[in-house]
Length: 506
Image (cartoon, rainbow, N blue to C red; front, side):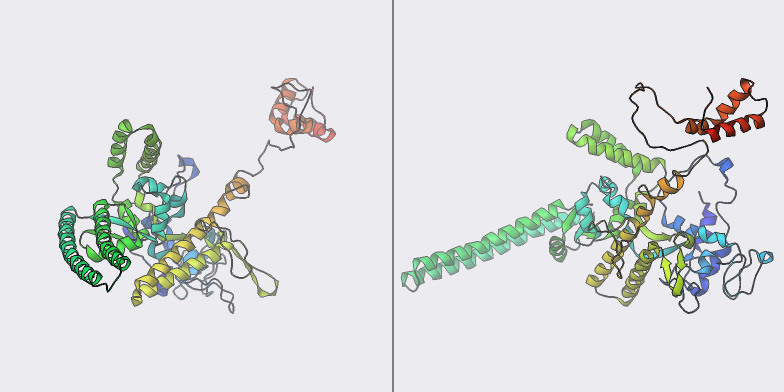
């Protein structure tokens, strides 16, 4: 964990313009001194916005990658040398400082630290998001992790996140009681006025009927029309009353109902749409109290409810034990991978082949910058909502593909599917199975599995050459034990001779 003083120092280095991009270049490595010798274990968890900023070497401000004229990384862009380190070993961007004797020096002209280019595989950047964004894994997983904590269905949460519905954050009980009383009084007054108007209109219609100015059918139509006004008033009153009574934190209501309530009773409640309001509710959750409440509910709950309560308890207990907050499900700062993990490779003819992640990051940065500019200009709420929704969708695509519409992200040029961060990790070709678990190691082998009719149920046939490889240490030990060989070197020679002939020892 970071000390408060270190965290404060790192946060004070917040990047605000291009001249400040390289400020974090020489900061102390927080992993210094942590080797595999004193490593107890590895835990994967949520990063808070403070941790993202403290691990970052600078904020990526523009979506550009390589300058097409100079063929050098753009300053403040996705491959910026001030943020991620130099492209050439121990050489700054402008060439003023070269060689290892200047190691650790930050060039006053270009702002690049003189160090090994290997740091471009380690240093991360970040994007300061103009609006909070929900992490798609905790929204779309089954069951939805956010839905479990707020006791809201995944479908309703989806509508709130993508600005189709509204969620309530606060309800003021005393003001609601006043509003219900005012609503009752207003309904009675309007009903009496409407009844007087209806009575007057019916009396007039009866006179005209007696004078034979209208037919009985026409009179019936007039009467039905007048009574429908009374029914409409009653329906509106009941609808408003029900909406007011049902208001509670984490209740999701449609846009029309929200507008209707807000126009009439803006002082009774607070709420809104988007990740910002979900974060308000998540930040209020006290995990200790949440666990105690659900444990008490579990004892009295019917079997149909017990499964969901157990899921809530499991999630809350995991968060509590790992000292993580539910509010971290909402992203406010987005980490950017080191550039050498998402490379751009120059091809013949001056063209570049780029990692899909660069296209996905570019889309996020462009939408984020546009939203920030529109917010500063005071754009209408409708435009801002649309931009926030687009930012949410672009980060969804970056993390996990286009989950909302069940379509993967595509490039505009050739409709090629883009590989998201999740695609890089998951599956047989993913980072874990392909690059980590799939590595060849000593004394291992692979083969096609075939049936052996002569084998018993508890037996397994193994080719002799493979058995020699798998059990090499045991074979050499047995040769020395049986005095066929007297030294390990002599046993190794016999072993190699057997391997060459493809035979094993008896």
